[in-house]
Image 1 (spheres, rainbow, N blue to C red):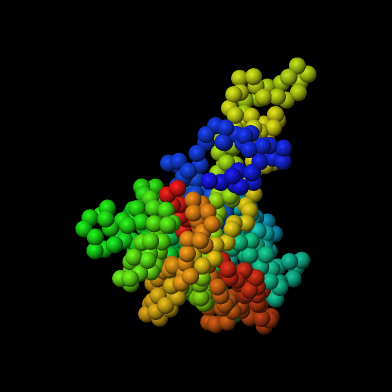
Image 2: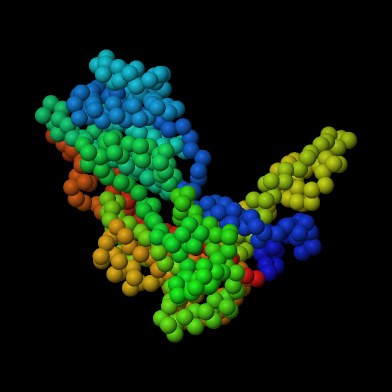
Length: 497
């Protein structure tokens, strides 16, 4: 089925017969296909990383801030955070004297004593930009407690967007930042303390945001900085049914399953990954015939239904319309799957008579021998590099009426439907045996740069100067990272060969 795919990942001097995967009868489409597609999807999706580093707590110990820490509401929130955080392994950092210092605290009591000790607040030099850069360079959740007053070269930063670059880097990786803003007064100056949660990857029950939002929300204003859409849910009839069309009038489960969805179905959303894989027992010709048969009864107009999105949170963006894009990803998937498999075939190495690197005489693995150099490193052509997929036009489209109507009735529960294109024809799928990917993408998104929440990122300092550095950092980040033409969800379809 995929000669073009095999040639795409061979070296220039190899012939068809030399492809080690063909020679060893390696089948990319065996019972492990679902796992391969999951790995393929995650490799091409920012924020899919599951390996998290140790979470960290960063506390601003600059001289003005101990006033905030003595405010009863703020003190209570800090205690709640400390108790929650230190129940697990955690790194705690103190920001002061232009340094980020690791604090050796064994428990909540010790940390509370440090925070309550006025002698700890020696100067105004908390290195906030460096701290945020350190968080962003890592791969774990972090809580930063600060007033975001940055001093560089003895001068307060008041209007430079000094955090725009690290904020943007964090969001580009598929992460988010959640600000919980508490108001307080320092010598008649109205100020804000920011409990800032840097959330790594897709949040789950163990994430900092999940553990702390209930502790912080009651006494703060919350602002979510993100260019991802994580608020997706499904309402499928059962765990194994997915969102495809079923004939509800049929007499048995087997008869209802008209598209013959197989056991290998995967719903990635259950693990925080926005994709599904549908292995179907029918070919596209049979699906086309079914579509025409049911269309006469005004059924099976939609291929996928029951996927919902919550667009009610407009802190960062107001989303407009969405659209559907269909591609044949066979060649790219096969390149990935072979490169991924090659990594599991490390060759045994030895030295030749003159000390030169060579494969061990005991090494008989054809994939290892073909995919690696004698120094034990993968050959260049077996290192996966994403390639453009083939667009397929007039296959599917977004059910715009469904989207508009459900949005009008409840912006927290808007339904996506993927419909057959009015000009659908199986001629529009040149390789009917290929792996088809159906993406739902955002078409327009307007950054929200004004309003009461955004005003909380600015303040008038003791010298009566307006400090807009934090708000400019956030606004510039939102403008640069507009999620336009961004994939919200992906369906993979593999029909019967």
